[in-house]
Image (tube, rainbow, N blue to C red; front, top):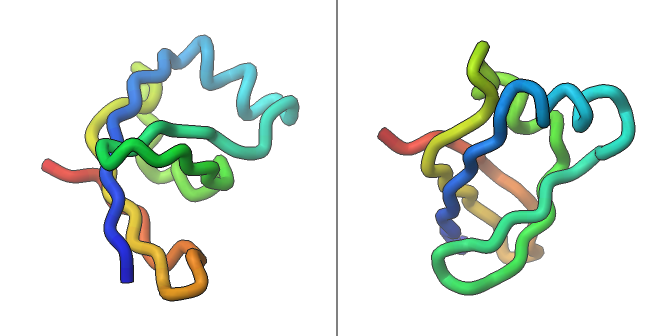
Length: 73
């Protein structure tokens, strides 16, 4: 398993463009220096009135498939 961490700060207005169907995934740069593309629907539970922000961790299995995404405190 591989754990990768990254930060996001996306305003509510900017998120409206994403969720209007134009974008299906977010591309992030991890703290480890890797570019990672994640399906947008995995972030829905973290979206608030102000948008989407915080530090996140993804856990990938040995086939680089997403096992877990969570926001870190």
